Image 1: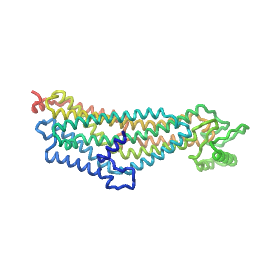
Image 2: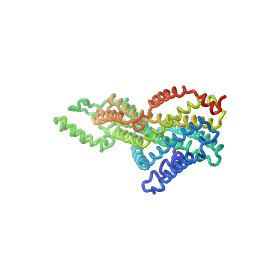
Image 3: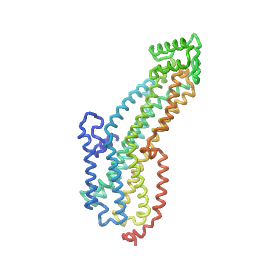
Image 4: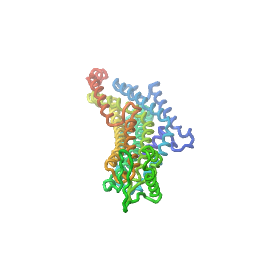
Length: 467
């Protein structure tokens, strides 16, 4: 489904043709991104300047139909032209940057899954895949019905010239929804990567429940002097000889520098390679050696979220605004006009149903965007919660070397700053989460209270729709 959406996006000039290739012809790549907006402006000016091929300029279109069609057409022009201008900016660079970072993230995740032996578990991935494809299939059916209704009605009125009014009626909302579909896809990819690293974090958490502390006691909180208990059955930690030798040399250094100050110990810890610190008990297959890579992955995925929101967040603003206006006016037309004079004017019924259909379609797309943004934020928070739970259990690998503890503590503290710094949003005007639904419904209720108080009977009588 995502491949079909990409082809459609390239066909109507929303993304470059060779968006993942840096050495391609720019004229070919951006040709459709210039041709389609120019053709749209031609149709828009043709209808408004020549007063032909427009529903609002037909003799059978009454005043309510004319007002509704004008609003729908001009609001669509605002939506499409805004999105088209934003699509040109940094579009090709974003696709290349996103794919490059995602390839690096996937390679590290695959390595961690092999270490943790979770690469054989596919049940969760299958469940996610079913929900993912069902969502796309539902959106495809909704858009198919909306386009079928509009094209059928316009062809019945204008015949072979139906493409001209279609370009200024449904096409802008279709283009805006496809751009939001691109946003949905990229956010779902980010959310899926968060789920994968959370699975690896949870594997470490489960192993921590069945571990016992080694024969070494550390004062982790104060980071003071350390005392090592000698025992004949002392166990060596590490996956291979290289790491075991590294830890042995570190232990010898701690013994010789026992009388040094705490600042010297901090300096030694700063010189230690955190990313290569893989310390596990030799009790079978363990996965805590993935912790440094998982912390790095979490930061990379958050950075990927930032550039994705920077690319698609501004385009959410005109789309959400258009969805809000179309939904309010659609409810008004359905309750105050169509409910009273339904069936007496074919063009008025067409415009009313067009509002209702596209208000439902845009609301579905907006809800999917909000849901996936919330899922991505929740999965990122879940990582910090799992790490904090591991710290509370004080597993053996953490007590064996306080570098793991310091790294986990830094990760949870850093995420607190991330949480206050970033979440998916529309250029800072509103957050893309479920709170946006509540604020939108509250504002819509206020407007509807005012609109529903208008008495439409006099207008409908003047148009000959009521006796």
